[in-house]
Length: 206
View (tube, helix red, strand yellow):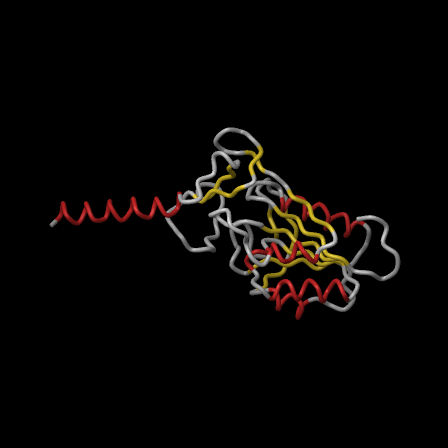
């Protein structure tokens, strides 16, 4: 951000596919705020307990303590009046109320730093992140490395048979893919494969 005068809040959004370093960048910014002796509060979705139940952990192993929330509205309830910087990880899991909470916190003069996926496993916009980008002052778009060809990757490829929008997972369930290697229908195809295997198994046993 450029120099900000007075008690003005703002919203910074860090987006990109899985394995692009979003949590790492979020942690870096929050640690700098702590070094500057600013009062910081950090939140993450209660459903995301992959590496820690009480902290944000990057895929590279960096960690910072955080509070669990069920949705964006709960962040607004938990932020203390004296807090100067608010950090949010895996924001795509926090629902439509996140947009209002972030906007209101920025209006109160707080710096709000949000990290999350901007597209889902089919390459579609992952709400509420796209709308949060519209109202933010600063956007950082990170790229990963394609697991197939090594090119810059903008997509998150789901490798398991599920068409649910939210399936929390990491390595083995997802990988980063570039535009060329991304297969938007891969999860659906895996579901059909499983159905055929199950049908063949029943036919063989019957």
